Image (cartoon, rainbow, N blue to C red; front, side):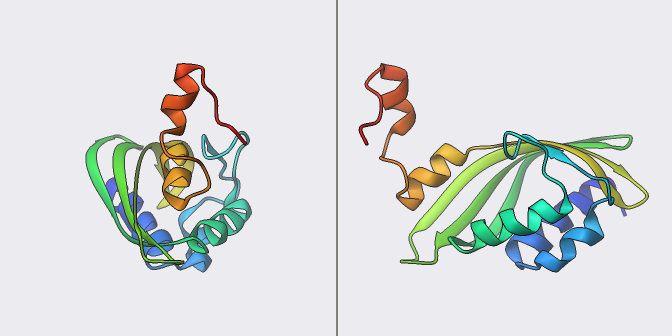
Length: 141
């Protein structure tokens, strides 16, 4: 399987199909993703992260917008299309990943996900939070 196809299968199986038990089948045992949180996230951590995200939204599609595959490495930008579980409001956010594959597993990954937009759309942050922060206004608690 091409490395890009493995990455696409990961997003579909774990996030769209919500099969958190599949996480271990995609990651090498000593895998650690960077950029998802302020610390590395391993396979076991992804179960907790996945459960927390999927308790808020149903992800309908992870669309790959741009992609590059070079040797063992894959880079892609993506758009996540979802709806909130509470009231079925649409949620859309973007991200990018750079991952290295070996023996049919993801062995290394570097992520950037627009969690600010995600949490704004869920109602956990006020609208235009980034603009407020950049203006110096701050976000009133």
